[in-house]
Length: 253
Image (cartoon, rainbow, N blue to C red):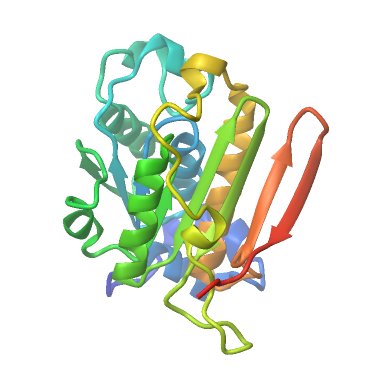
């Protein structure tokens, strides 16, 4: 986190609805301003994450994506627009953040998040959010966040359902036991091609908004200390049934 957390008068006016909340208040808003959050993916999940964290006043957002905006993205990636088709997603997203909140600094990383690139990309960040669309990146993000000892918010969507959880496996809970790892939830990486991607099966655009917004909420809670994050809990959403379910999972070793 950065050292200067003083809120200017324009910032106080902008974030007043946060400051009025006892669970956040001025100190929580200052923590948001000081926060440095790295987001993997400026797509379906990343779009609402980036927009809501920018609106919330997170001081520095790092965006990782090496793709360009295509017409097929616009059905679910609301951070982009028709006139940004063909642009790098990190450029399109950065422009949207600048228009939304000039108090937020954006660091664009035109690359992929891999076990090799992870240490350099994570350097200086307080929290990692994984909005990727493949298991290889999800496992890499989980391993890297644990090694760096920073929280990870991770989510996934498919067709009409989605899920998210929060990981801090380097830290113990109130019972003295360490919080679970990603592999306690998903022990092994599925073989390539076993799980279909949205380009093959489709996905409802609004679903990514639901899960991405919940991911942003978890990040805000982690930074400000408000509420209880989804540690050791997987939240699942069935859009067709209009139902949320939460299951608990534990550390296996």
